[in-house]
Length: 207
Length: 207
DNA sequence: CTCGCCGGTGAGCAAGCGCTTAGTGCTTGA
DNA sequence: TCAAGCACTAAGCGCTTGCTCACCGGCGAG
Image 1 (cartoon, rainbow over the protein chains, first blue to last red):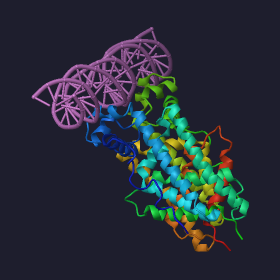
Image 2 (tube, rainbow over the protein chains, first blue to last red):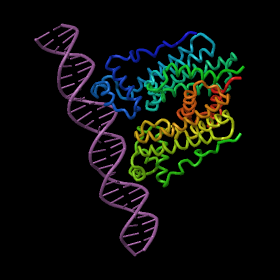
Image 3 (cartoon, each protein chain N blue to C red):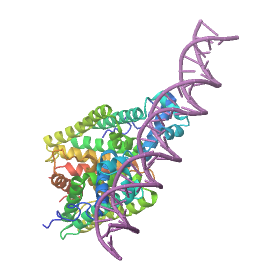
Image 4 (cartoon, rainbow over the protein chains, first blue to last red):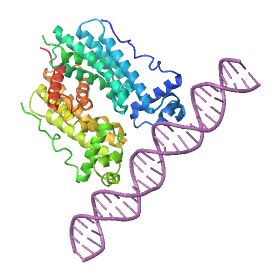
């Protein structure tokens, strides 16, 4: 079976953000937002983590909210890329669902700081920015729903409520960002494998 | 099959909080924290929603953090009560797991404002208060893990990784508080039934 | 060498924050 | 009837916040 393990979005994070000072500030912000949340993080804290003065932030970003928006947009794009890359491999719906779930979970575990900001700080975005991000989330939803639909069609899956099950599968993956801890016993690979198995059992038709 | 539908924690919310002014403030705080998060909520906002002056808050609570702690503690106790009440019914591990999941999910959906604060604002608590709350969460974990263990022992369940699956089941239930929306199409009962079914399929041994 | 440009800084402003305090009116028991 | 005690308010204190602005050093072009 082919793998999407080395898909985009897992290596060289944030290298598309330039110049270097802007990237350093953004990386510092991801760390701070993930640890304490957007509203509990001060611009002074972000600048301090990046080793710069508070005013430096405003050379590269108009507001603190714009910084969150950049993180959220790039993060969502990466996550969607990982998910649809995995869903697009050749294979049966079961194989594709397993690949999609394990890759998506691996991303949420391996990059749990980014994922936490991306998934749990949506409310802090302006209405306009949030609307844009929600559209990206709808696309993730569509990817999973389509695999389930195909599996039901082929008879591989037995899923009475496709939209509800789609929601549950994505919810399960996303929540990894909340509890996953680098100090914990499990590696991202292990969690991805466990979750792929659990999800397959949720949808597979019994013989 | 017996039901835990009318278990504690779903009716007459917060009626243990007295006097009335303290309860009104607490209910207002739950609403505000759920909508905007703890750090984005001001004491003026809470007092305003309760129809009182900002200073009134400090007659009933020492700090804003103490208010969060009260919400978090009572909420966790209610959630644990719902979960272990459902897990304690007579029946096979499958029946008990289904009841536990559907009740727990129903609580997270039906009282999603409280659940959101309880589940997603833990970081805002002081170290001391958080330690106390984490202990309550460990007990929820133990309830689910014990059902899984018994099901494996009886041969009803096939669960290679009991701790990991426990985590996944609880994570699935908890995340309901994040996405559940009163305007949505599903009722708490429907989501509870769907999730109980999905979880049973995750753990049931194939014949 | 000098000048202009530009990423970066130090100091600080206006606003809003959590919380306090002096005072007010209502209730209550002798 | 009235003093004490109570829940509550108006005003505001000290501080931190997001953000601004006058200024500065280094560097490439003429």
